[in-house]
Image (cartoon, rainbow, N blue to C red; front, side, top):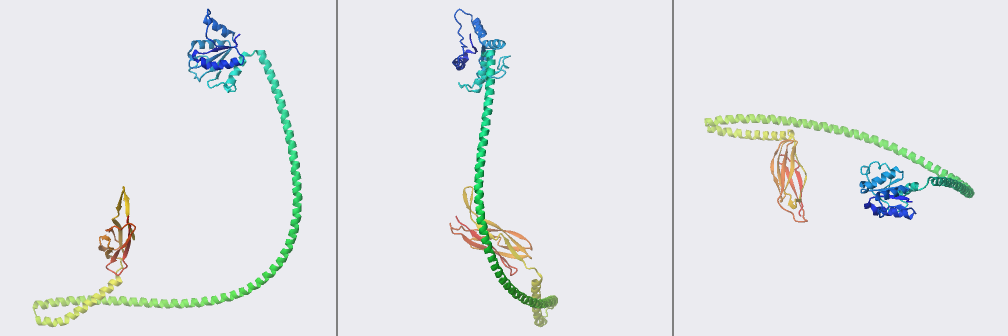
Length: 443
């Protein structure tokens, strides 16, 4: 009687062969030859072996799912309750024959002959369940239950034995620990005794040192008291010196106030003098105008004699009036007009070689800003020999700014930088000039 019936496509014969060899090696009789004996109908021959077999294995692949014979044999085996489905390759639900997808299948597509493989063990449980009689399976189940019980009892005994051994080991460790603690306690007692003796000696020494320290502190205290008295005397002396300094400072403040009042009076007198000179200039100008008018009348009358006599008097008067007017104008301009100052930014310039798109270029022009503050200013610029300034002179109103170009006209040699400067002079006043320091760097 056949144990196992193989249903597969002839194209999968070599893929099925390792499974057939493994089952035959375990002692099972496997029907898998598709060669029909001479003189026998193929359908009858197949049906006989399928009916006589204890289980039928349908091997599914992309080829066998389209085989009518494999699907028919699997359907008959399923009706007889002996079908075991085996996957030779992963298949989707759409590829499986109708009515057979729900059948649990063992996936041996990745099996390479290893009997411990999970899918092979699953496959083995399925065909052993089909091939083993019911009474044998019951006896096997009873034996397995007894084995499980015996294994459980043995494991319980082993656990109890391990617990006892653990307890014994712990007790031995505790006894050893207690012995070590006792020895340590004895050593600590001896150490404490020695420490007490050492502390007693140290206390005696400390008391002696304390008495000596107290004596030293008493001497230092007496010395500190003497020093404190000296410091108090010094502080009193310093207070007296401070009082004297304050009195001198008060006297100095009074003198400064008197000097300030005197300077203020002198400034008022100077302003009065300026006003007198201004009035004198106005009178002189009026007198000059009157004399000029009279001179024109004299010239018109062509009285040469009278003109000569008149010149001897008018010319000295004109000279005096002009001098007075000049002095008054100079004093008023000095005292009344603001003092203009020039400033320039930036105060430092550097001409150097710069890289531009693969070429090296010497910087030629730089910009500075000149500004007048405190009043209008006329200015003029002077630069070193290798520098030019554009514009070089001009006038600025109060708080007016002007952008000026400083140009380099010479190239310094490599490693020999040159120094220079541009000076902006105030032509209207003796004010400080604005200076720009300039450096030229070569290749």
